[in-house]
Amino acid sequence: MQQTKTNPGQVAINLMFAVVSLLMILPLVLVVSISVSEEKSLLTNGYRFIPESLDFTAYKLILQTPGVLLNAYGVTILVTIAGTILSLLMTAMIGYAISRRDYRYGRITTFYIFFTMLFSGGLVPSYILITQYLHLKDTIWALIIPYLLSPFNIMLMKGFLQKIPGEIIESCKMDGAGELRIFFRIILPLSTPALATLGLFISFMYWNDWWLGLLYIDNQNLVPLQLMLYRMMNTIDFLSSNLRRLNVMIDLASFPSLSSRMAMAVLAAGPMMFVFPFFQRYFVSGLTVGSLKG
Image (cartoon, rainbow, N blue to C red; front, side, top):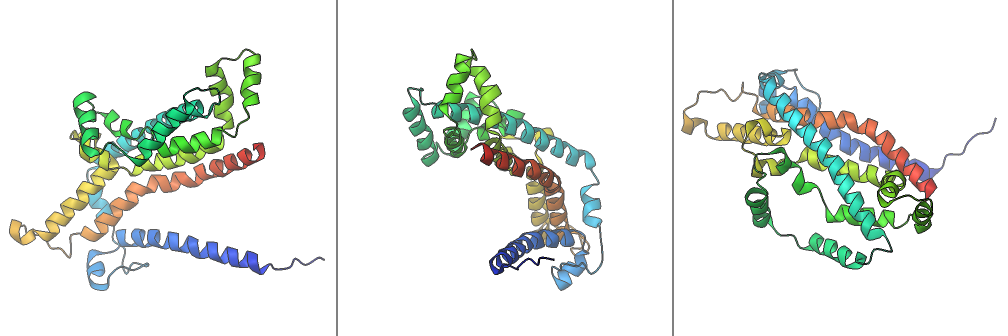
């Protein structure tokens, strides 16, 4: 029976990745542990990976009004799905156009996109554009449109599409295919690795965003999940630091201020943590297929 030799270099690499994985998992475990810990225990003993006694008061407090939480989930899911699809489509179309060698204004357009990556218009012009000219305040589009196009993503897409041989496009044209058919039937399927990579980044950006909601959303029915978390944090901080001034009779030892923050963080990040492993399987598979095609 042939014995396999242990490679020290491979063992070192595995150990390194094991340590990195632990460093990423342990903070998450600590957040979950705090969210189910008793408030008195947290104030007395500090944060612990294993809670001294289980207490789900924070989750009960948050879920007392499930309608608000479900509405925030719905807004965030809608914005994430619609924003990711639209952003990928527009990024791919622009990246494809400036990657074509027969596009006369390719260099000028590429420089224009690169210039916006270095110098943006700033917050005030962006706010005026969204509210005064496009009239998108308090609409779902105010949470989608500002992040639709990223110059960095366009440049990444262009770099990938430039590697697709131009002969493929020429042969499609000789067979009578139009530009739209070439793009949707040939280019997009060949771009699966790039689309999977950018789609992952874009979906996380939309899911984690609270800034656009803070700027443009006053309607309570359009508040996204992360903005609701932000407002809850501020409310808890305000009550905790102004109890005497407000003459509010609340026992801080019994009010789950610390565990509520962590419980809300778990509820906000939970869906993406469960979705990501399933998506990652297709993501890695797409990268492998792309490398074989390249």
